[in-house]
Length: 447
Image (cartoon, rainbow, N blue to C red; front, side, top):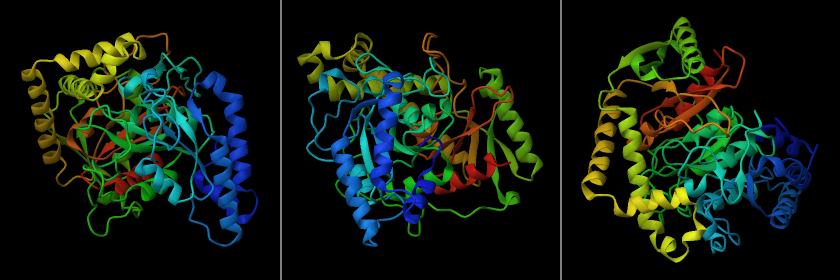
């Protein structure tokens, strides 16, 4: 199944060249072959998946297909509820936390006929960017064994990059979908806050968390978004998209596109190859007639915002996980336990200042986006790095912006000028411009 997209698999199913059961068996064969080294899965559900595949094949024979995702294998991050198995969030203390109901996004995938293979490895508690999980193993980057796939949705990206499935779900608190997409050369979307329901998500931070898809290409990402973007009246954070909203957006004339570019000082600490690839793309963009404007994001100090987001995550996680920590301290790693313990006792004045920081950044970026199609910048200041290297503190410097503002952000890959690991570009857009960002990313990636 390697390098096969959801659309090509769907076409093969429609033409009778394969069956859903054959796709599922092939996917589990790949898991058996690759996952002992990859460490991408927490739990698999072969019996349920094969039963769902048989049902999908029966629907297709009866001319009752549910759409292009019917019969397509997918997988979900380990903090998204799947009925009958543990929603661990990568935390050993929750190994027996069996879900009694599917998450809303899982129900949507099933209603579209997608077949869920299991839950995926992640950075413990979704609080980190390497997916070196102390309980379910050190997840590997399929592009470079020994390197991190990013986090916290590292298993989600690794499973797609390894060619096991074409689409997975992750969650994004300060970049946890986009950072793994960036490190693994994939497409990832952090949606507009509330566009995709969080019901059934094991939260790290209810203020910052969003569920988002990771895919091999823009077409599959659009397909996933079209299925997942549904209003959920039982989710307190869910919101209705504007009338006429659609995930599928037409191409735009290049001369009509206006992109905002942050001040070059923001890129000062980027890895040289990231900065070179970004500047090369900007030159190519300008050469084809796309207008670029400098944007004033003076309210956004990436390090300050990252620290504010981290404190909010620790404080909210401390509230959510405190009782479990008191009951089973050994079910948490030392580092994760220390972070959420700090969150439980952090001074109120510091937490209040962190929330104020988010508000200031939200106001500033929304102001600067007026009249723009998107703000363009690198997804991460660095490319994937070896697990043995210390994780750079700056991993989420560029991605936290969209979470603070509640805005959609797309990550998509471009080649590095040194022909090494790919570089990733991020587009941050106005609320509910999710589909537009994907269409725009497709155009820019083709320049």
